[in-house]
Image (cartoon, rainbow, N blue to C red):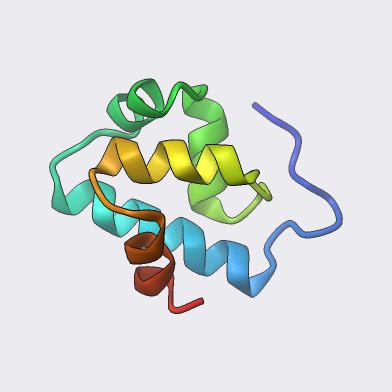
Length: 81
């Protein structure tokens, strides 16, 4: 399992982003593994992002949004960031 991003792990913004990713993923019937594959990320890393334990980079967020089938703007709006 990836080590959490110690400086920002569990930050409310990361928790909100992770919850938005999880909600949108589930609404589209995607498993965490499916989304990780579509986003070219490791499943364990995806799990950490959804839990708010990772501070994903811009390109990871872009890949996740594409994997879900939404824009980054829609993903951020869902997270209320």
